[in-house]
Length: 131
Image 1 (spheres, one colour):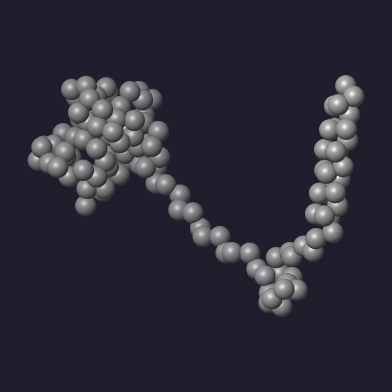
Image 2 (image 1 turned 90 degrees about the vertical axis):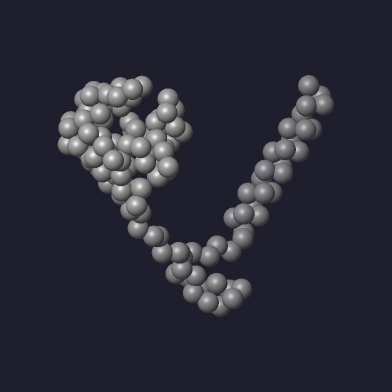
């Protein structure tokens, strides 16, 4: 205990000195003049983030698990070589397979609460990535 007291005291003193140094340092706020450069400091303009489409949202929540990695032979997103055997079947057949399941793919990618419209939007998103 005798050894621990000086260590705790030293740590406490260092913390106090550090806080005092921070409090004493000049702060530059957005829109204020900086003493060092005498120029206006402004925060960077945030770029608007593009919201994902509904089809992309569904893809990210449901389809991505297999179509990102090619699990169980699923054609990967944007990989034209892997999709070329499926594309000639036509969009109507691809949608039917997506809704009812095909091969190792479960109906609606295993997300049974998806509507036909939502599955169609996800398929549109995936097909658009092939262009």
